[in-house]
Structures are given as C-alpha cells and as structure tokens.
Image 1: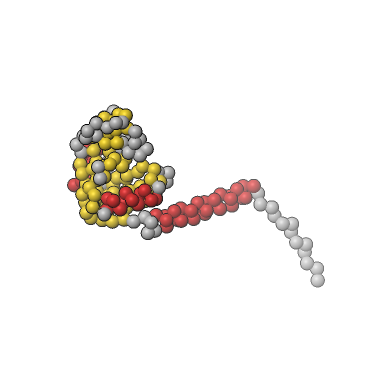
Image 2: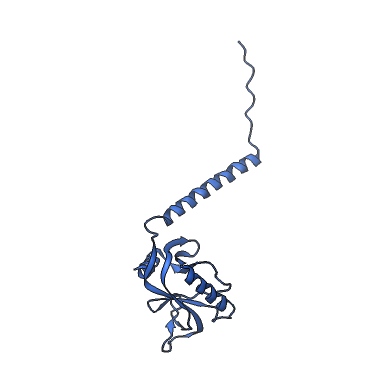
Length: 183
C-alpha cells in the first residue's frame, strides 16, 4: 500500500514568531505583577484602622533654610537633615479610616493613610491653600513625634481621603514608622 508523500513542514513567519514572543512577555509580566501583589498582601505589609497611637501633623512649610535650626523649627529630615523648616499651622490627625504599609514602585515602601471624612475635608482645604503658593510655601511637612518624616511639594489640591507618606524608605524604615504611628 502506497501512502501519499508527507507535506513539507511549514515554517512560521516572522510575524507569528513575534506574536508568540509578545504573548510570552505579557504572561511573564502578569506573573510578576501577581507576585508583587502577593508581597504587598503579606504579613510584611500590615494595616490597621481606628485611633492611632502617634498623632500625625500636616503642617505647611513657611521657610526652608540651612542648619542650625532656630528655636521652634525642625530639621527637614531625610535626606535633607542639614536643612531646617519653619512650619505654619495646619492640622493633626489622631484617628484614621485605615493605615497601611504598601510597596509602591518606584517610591519604595510608603505609609498610606485613608482619612476620616471630616479630616479629608480639612486636608483638601489645606492642600488647596498651599498648592497655590511658591516654594517653600507649597510644601507640606508630615510630622510624627516632633520629627519631619517628609515634606513634599503640593502642586495640586489633594481632595481624596487618602495620602501617602513616602521618603525612599526601605521596608524596615517603613515598618518602624508604621508601628510608631499605629502604636
């Protein structure tokens, strides 16, 4: 019995090979994203609700100058410890809807705080006011235990209930800050 000859194997076109490679890259990217999400949900990324042990003060910066600091002013904190900040009146948060430690590329570890509705309104008013100022008046110092944790520039009003404290923290520094605020 004679069988017909087998057809020659088909070669994949460069376009099909490109699609296969693109699909593999997408699958690997999704897998990496899932791993990152699992890391932020791990016990190393704690969260809490309700009263916090250490009040968080959110104060407008009125002056930024080289150390030594005048009485009542504070060192600017990491990474500008050689600078001093004069601070105006702002607001102090003593209870939160939620506080959590989150890994947020490229900022690194951050402390994310969801404010209670009345504080969110005050925070929106404060950031609206300072976002209209020029440097250093557009900076908002985040103060915990009489130390400036961060003092970012506010370029637009922050009207949502959430804020993040960032400062290029490694995981251990963020955990220490989280534990200090939460108590």
